[in-house]
Image (cartoon, rainbow, N blue to C red; front, side, top):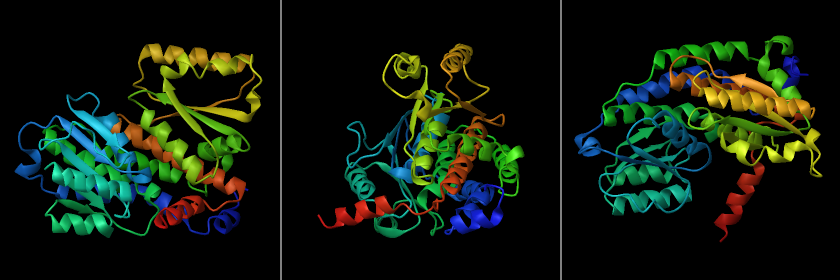
Length: 352
């Protein structure tokens, strides 16, 4: 069914395919947005050693990416998925307030707290209350295109922050040209026109059919990619999924796979997201873990990041995972775009 373009079009009524295929262009535009914004002395100021990214759902993923990319820098980066800011924020803290819609209530609450604490605020939004509040308070803001599901805007919601943080910290870390080149290649390689026999993302999606995906990555390397894929499988594919990282996974989650418990192991499908920069001891742990899975006849899949620059390797993994979640939705006959339960929950909250 994944090679039947008319079937895909019939299921994908909201046309997520087009948004996925345009991701390389989104990256180009996002890079330009970051480069075009002037980092004022008010934002840069004295040495910045604390960064907080406020956001929820698809608007928070940029903070996770930022935290992974800048983990080697002597800068504290916190992702705030809550109403309240961390207690350590002060007037020297840079706070990125990110809400695609501009109306996320937790994020708006955090924005107002940041104002009271005189933080160095930058907002990223497509409009809504956050845009209005930013204009009213003379807060630097990056306006991104509207009309897409927030989870499909990972480039717009993260890359401008990455470019800006390089400016703030006065560092030059990432190869953005390579990023665009690699995701452009992935866009062609995993497009629906590519048959299942030569399309890895279609093949992995078929292996996940009827299974509970367990996504495993590597701490401070592919951790953000596995977390992202878990949420994409939730929202796009409408399936329950879980994520964990090495080496932590070896200290707890590995135990049930011994087969000693009452758990039916054949309902799971582990998926490892690997990276050439992984520590040698981690590589050995993964190899042993996969051997234990094989011993207990547990089938698994494996993906590798692509590119030289860390930013390319992270986004290549994220983008590949997005295609997997898209095809798993098609296999199950569900439109990947609508998230009716989230909409229902928001409607109920508005009544309170």
